[in-house]
Image 1: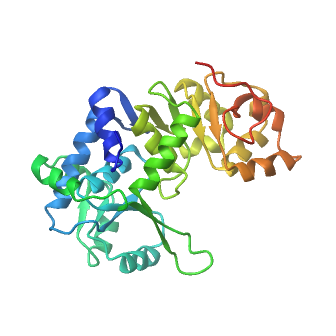
Image 2 (image 1 turned 180 degrees about the vertical axis):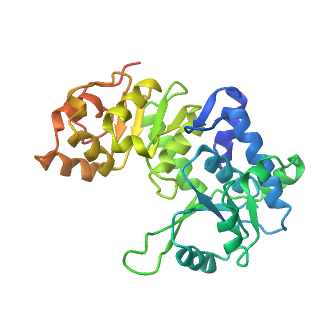
Length: 313
């Protein structure tokens, strides 16, 4: 069946694996069934705010599993989400919201003060309150039915390093087509365990999110502090039995240059994906311990990945 909405992935995985772990951080986890239930609750709460359709909804993110449930709740309401780092300075957040004119702002529990500082710009809703909202299936089905595959899934604002931050909008069809290709090319299955490094306001994280949804896999959000202590990071990956990594090359550099890969090999990791242009740069960087990296990270499934063993199974 041809998907037209990324939520089709969530529906499918929740039906096949309702009790299987979907996303987890240090403090909280969601099964696929729980994820869908929370998303539909929040979706109903957002839909109750008004009849608007296909509007941006800002989501303040702090790199937790609950952020992802919030994203899917926005989609359930027939809108598209815009992740915003809650660590950004308040004037920048206000500037983005003024540009965006969102239907609502969804914020994590405990961030009421920040949310109220933005409440003059749009309605604000605590994600946890939304998750607990009774879902209205007919309302959500009607909202879903109006979404086209060319409608947006999300928008991400640039850093603004060269000027005013700009919003980049990505459609359902783009995410679906890329996810289908990537799942097939890398042979991802429900048995895979992803180790998420990228923040959710960085589009590299989209690969972790939607491969997990499509395949019924599991994603563990790696604690930021573990990247400061690579030995702890390797212990985390081993403990969670991580099989796949989609990391920014800068994170890869950090781990590789620490020397920890010479001391510990993680046989469970079968595939790691990096920007292929940046991979070429890595091979030219004499300070990077390339051979140690290849033992752990590279998979012979995509062009540009060399001297590695193909994935088994």
